[in-house]
Amino acid sequence: MTEFYPYILPYIKSLHLIFVITWFAGLFYIPRLFIYHIEANDKPSPEKEILSTQLKLMAKRLWYIITWPSAILALFFATGLLIITPSFLQLSWMHVKLGFVFLLILYHLKTHQIFKQLQKDEIMYTSKFMRIWNEASTLILFSIVFLVILRNSLNWIYGVVGIFALAILLMLGIKLYKNIRGKNPDA
Image (tube, rainbow, N blue to C red):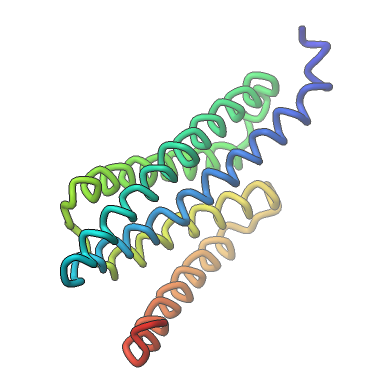
């Protein structure tokens, strides 16, 4: 069986990457639907109920048809890669990557909790919080991609400073958007 590994490895890597991309697509979009749902709660009836019903349906389809299956398949193919190439587990960058993957799984599970609350119309967070929450997955994605691409050549000091700089830029972007939206509510 091991003689087939060199032939199937590129396919497993490709499938892993495809499902990571679709997983992140779901994680990027679902908080946006949460924001719309939270903001719809402030609308007058019947607009509030119409929007809430539609947004819950959209979120449910995104979450259960795209995001969860993509997460499971991305992790399945990642496990396959580690089984085929166990030497990866001896590399320090892989340990750090797995730490970020653990954070991503925690982020996914917390997002699932928020999803379940909103499906019951339990508004526990503000739209501002959700905008910030939405950027957490971006930081995790940047961290994982730079780590995997740069691997051992990554200077950790520059990497950490870069991630914090990105976080600051994202927060400034949210603040700028809030200011623009305050001047033009349809933005």
